[in-house]
Length: 290
Image (cartoon, rainbow, N blue to C red):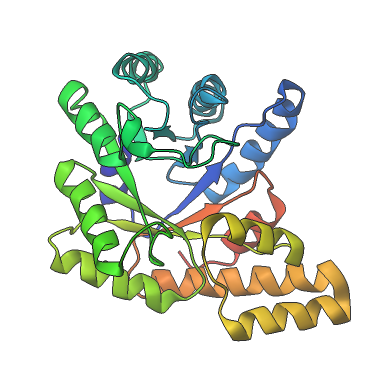
């Protein structure tokens, strides 16, 4: 089913994000996590995509098995980096053959180890190009886009970032999934600004449960999100006094309250970044009033 239609039929909801394990030996454990998280009745689950090759085939196979064997509607990531019209068309045909109708169109990150990578040298420079391509060739598919309550670190200004996301909607994105963030005021202000630009589509907030201080700082260094000062201080104090167990408890409590406040404030649902682990996400989901 199309995620666009599922969103219209149920709100609020929980959705999930997984990444394909690189080693096939890890797949049985991965699908055990998927099966455990079915308890939360996720509306859909996104599966990330390796730019320029990498895990693209894994994305397709995992999404197919997730739908066929576990009854969870998949949303496959699709990036413009390293893409050609032929590659995109081949991947999209494979999705349709597997009865998968949902794509999250992304620009993607530059290839690892490539300095001064020029996105403009690509056949598809931006996520908007991918959105247009899908809309022209596969109009039956439901396409979503990424959004950034804290502006993308490459954006020259907040307004230019908003304009780019609004352009995604104009080109055909029917919903948006946000990068992780920790201050809900950013989300609600962001949604209001997008509506003022005519981009009135569901904006699903992305929530990352912090499980350890080390992993949190690493993940944040990759995406550019900021932890509010009071929360960061509390995490550091918890780590000093009780180690990772104390940080985990505080992180889960914060993520649960953040998710509930977003739902209570009118968010269509919450998108939980699972990091391919079940326990924390189950704890959050079980405590949400949905």
